[in-house]
Image (cartoon, rainbow, N blue to C red; front, side, top):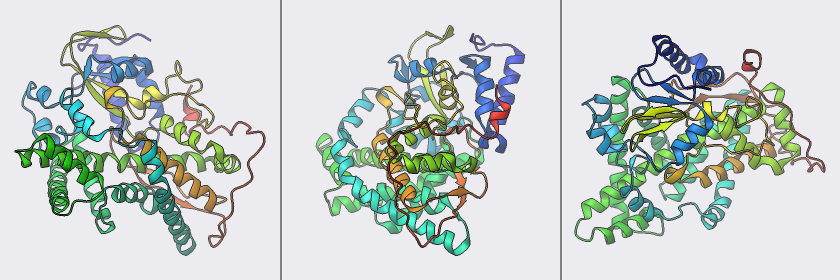
Length: 454
């Protein structure tokens, strides 16, 4: 594939890209983005974005950007070199730009060092029993809702709940605050879209102010009553780094808590809802297969991350003049890594539109390089714990209708997925015995784009 060329690409190319991006944000594009990604990729690995910068669609080019040391995140210093814009000066954008995912070295190195290996094997093993308990409890609640009403919304009853339960307990935040945490998280992420509207920035800024008050109060409470929890540990660490400046220590702890709180909720909820949708659609053949082969639950989680990643777009800037996939890119120019398009690059993944539990291939859903997702281990734990609980509880689980999505391009969010079951909700069927020969699972390509895609 050849790139479209420099930022002055042809009018036809610009119009094609604009049209495809509009489709991607539409309800149709949210529910079925795969044809749009395919058409973007056929235009080239590196495309001029209509607002400036580039869209990166090919797997190898995206991987190079995420892992390469000559690519930086758009931090506050970069923002200060740009023409004044409401996009970067909004309070929500400014607040997120102080967090880890918008820091470059040495600031990033300094903050990340304070966290250590946040979710190492020992931490995951210690969290696993409680996450499993939470998973079983909310799955039981799902069964009760289906018994009483005939159907239930998987997102609100299950998908949104497990991440906030797990993260809230880890941070020692009382359950009475969890619904509020979900609420301001859903509103805050507008600021991280590619082109947020004034209304979206206002909503996001209000949510950011609420988060500031909430987490500032949390830090104040932990100072007064320190415990054996991550927030207390971070306070102790940063007090040592700023022995004469408690305000600086508190600001750094705030940035960490806000980032981890936000980053761990929506993405994990989307992962789990996507997994249920992909396994139960098309008559539930993949669901039935996985019940017979529960040893492949982790593989199902990984294929979900590849097939429909929770984050569809991420942004980087060139640290110096460079060439990417044959396209010259100037220093400070922004590029947008299109995770979804890259994940379906046929040069990397054979038959990429098939949902194949046994694919066993790499993906970039957790990013790469120094900004590789801190919470990858926790997200995987939540995914496999929830699927285990669901497969144990329901012999059948099927969608009542297709999912609905928030109109976003960066953070994927399923807003509703109604499900039901043919099981007796009062029963809790045991998992089927493991099959001696784990035959390949049934095809699970998108029921829409199987007929629309080449």
